[in-house]
Image (cartoon, rainbow, N blue to C red):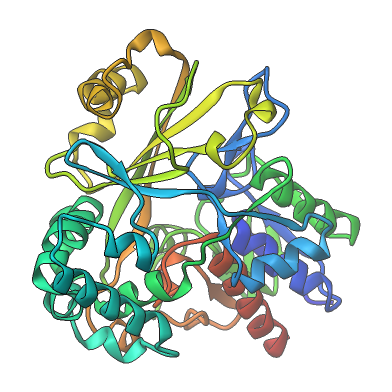
Length: 416
């Protein structure tokens, strides 16, 4: 019987393990952390009955891969239709539908129609991969109009990608429009409950998960791979691409050079609500955070001890000063802007806070990336790779992590 080692117990690693185990192969998963999930990791305060993700998470109604695996392990998704808003010139406005865009007085009627028509064309496009030859900054203004681009999309893109905004290709933007649905999904107990159910499925079927096990270098000997002094026929690495060469030096494959952004979140437990919506994009120049997500405007606050929970989210380039700030420094830095959103807001409204930072969270996909995208077969027999640099043209997300896990497991099964 072939032995498979999987490095990483996030959604990709666990999905691959389930697909393998359903086909008669029992894998061993090594996870460096003491909890499951990777970038989808969670925590739980004492007064809460549900866990909360370190970074805001939800799924869409067309995220078929994660919906299917959630049903398999007995944790079906729950869908709701929360309000999505944008903050511009001191107002929280709804801009998530054609009708709401037509009411947006910052644009002329012609600009509103232009933007609505351009976004509708992207939404209806069955396959937008050919758009990868264009940069977003070049093509999007022509599709949605220069005025609409300047007021809305340019601000969002600059806030998210910072110094890399001129590199992003248009196929990536197409997926953001094409995939979005009004209804958003979550899981009873949080995403951690789904991860735990997936891990339980693997263990029940005979697989093993070794938590708190950081894998150093792995070596090949006589057609076998040595991982933590164990011999395996196949190894799947689900870690970020920049870390792979440290684990497996001198690989024959040359990985494409990609830029990455850190993910950062400051989570505030509040006495009262801050915004009307669940998700509020910031459409202001020079704000220190990209988005405000009030979790308890989608998920009942009774699951979190009756408190309001709020994310302040960012993507940051390596070296950004905010990465080095602790939660108290971040709150002080953000406080004047929170008061712009709600003039009566004060630090006394915050009962607890948490902050998280993770490198290599958001890959920046340049033009024509499909021509250089890494292959899951890593150039050595029995060695496979699946990570966020390979979900292209889609954006990072749990659904594509699951799909990637399924796909790489199928590849492994073909070679066994």
